[in-house]
Image (cartoon, rainbow, N blue to C red):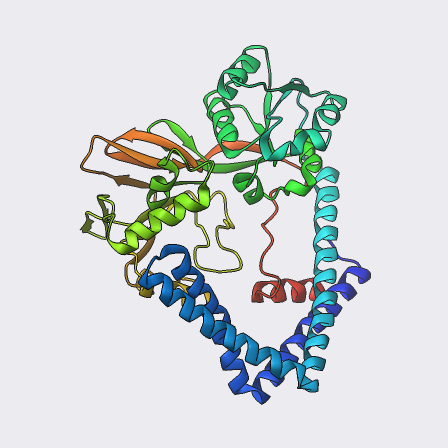
Length: 446
């Protein structure tokens, strides 16, 4: 796609705003080194205090309140400094104004880019022509997002057969019935559980599917570039382009996002979890940290080493951003053909403090960056346990399996149709250096 002068000028102004922001920040830090150090300690201090208070009782709770007090004192010092320092106020106002300009330009450029990409995709004829499209809508998912956006009416106007589920309906059965009646593409608006059930049928029958971000978290939909606030836009997948993405299997069940063993599985295994998520999570964490609950007996191997215990094992379909505080949980690639395993073998306050430090300054770049934290990629992963069954969190849902459990990646197994611009990348931290490089490429490209 060729860029016009208006596009390049907008990118140039955004790049200039970014550079001016960087200069102001560096200048201010150079003239306020002591204050910058104090400011840098405040947020980690308050977050660590929140961790102690949320997971503690008695002595831990008192320690948490003390750390919180220290953090509040530091914050008060910073506030007084800003109130009595005109230069600091002017610098802050300047930064705020420039940031608003930069973010507005970046948002406009992104919107234009994907609009141009869609027109380009349509122009070169990469458009599907389905004859019997079928869409299943969960009306309660995402607080009724699909119905509020008028998705049933919009889809029917496009010639799509629509079925709005009722209480007790099984998505997989409905999908199989649609296939038997001649559906040549299966669409779904719902949570990841519903998407996974439909994906199983689509893969079995070698059919494509269209995903609408109608769930609560929309984990999978977001990672293929769909935005919940623009759910109606995702209907363009029915006249869109084909993309192949990876999934995984766990004892025959399709996995779209990840499988979790240990801590998270224990939390969602509690019968009161849905009604009291915060209280249940806090209690499980408190029991682990106090020693009331022992580390989970999870058996797995890594680089020839046999592990018999772990606090948490997360197996993701493709690579997840794990320790970047601005992009945690993002997947930048959906067709790399690997599983990413992240294992935490011990949970302590000191580990949380180290995690907080790493998340504040950058990503985990190697398995040796943090003690008791291991991360690697593999095409398959097996986990065992002393008991005959094990509870797992599969795409956020509680499941129970016979042990040992093996998860395998299925490269490019799922065919997804998306709007004509293709799979959008998830929004990145706007101040990431990759954004700067992209802006420069937009300026230099002719």
